[in-house]
Length: 218
Image 1 (cartoon, helix red, strand yellow):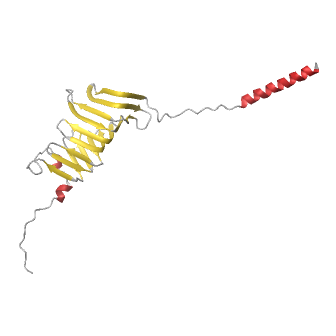
Image 2 (image 1 turned 135 degrees about the vertical axis):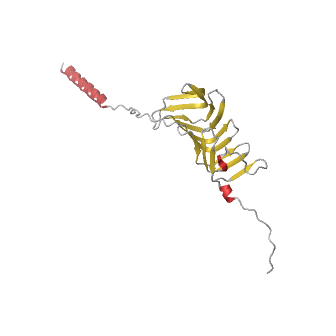
Image 3 (image 1 turned 120 degrees about the vertical axis):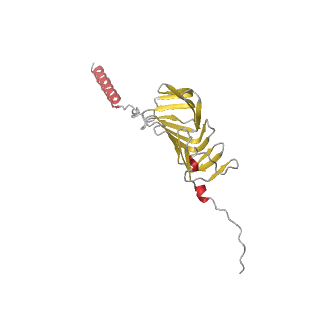
């Protein structure tokens, strides 16, 4: 009987040791990720959709990947796979198209930020290209602080700063590197072209004509 009691005591001691070691074991779990700075509320692939503003269809967005992140400050739409955007007038006529390799739209600021091979074409035939372009929908302006090129049916301008109204009918190119006008009309006479009246380094550098002078005797 004594041997049996001894065995029971040893068995109970072993169980107690086993339970204590189990209680002291640490659970290896990763902590929750907060805040969700890198998590988008929506990620959509293969997008071809129409966007309305105040009940009127204004834009068509075509992109491979569209993310909406409302946690980042400021909140934004992300188009890291490129963006093609068409702009419509009230009668659903295409007014312009914009494309870029990467784009961000800050919805609270109503500001577009475009990067990469940025191209714009308007209904009047104006073509714009640059590596960067901002579109401020509150001030109704386009602007770029990088080398930009503007081509119209009569003119080509290149410069390191670009500013335009939202329709790209009035624009300024500063620090220009070259300008030419098709035809024999010199710099042109289109009064709607604000470049003609804007400060232009090409105009400032334009040399005055020189005339032959008789050689003076020494």
